[in-house]
Image 1 (spheres, rainbow, N blue to C red):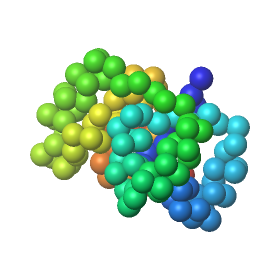
Image 2: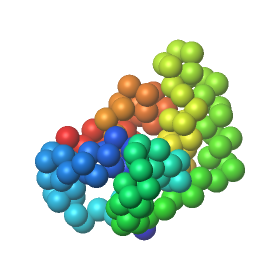
Image 3: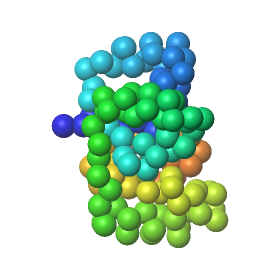
Length: 127
């Protein structure tokens, strides 16, 4: 069972051994965090070579993979239609938010501006 999802910004901080991120994760060791395929791809996109990509994949393997469903994509498309122009929310953010909405899971992120309009109180700033 997954307790919350981690957004790309948090994962990158953890990969870079950012002290606040490591401290926060240690304080929440009891939580089972998940990621989606889109989040995994965003993290891999930041790798500058194959070695760093392999390191990122090893790191990402500790998190439960949450599948994005067809219903998630329909919901994401609806949210994009509602919030794209009013809040500059992008397609990927809507797709990332969808499983959180469906499963009623918190999303830990630094991107509060884009996620809060569509997820409300499910959006959490970890540190």
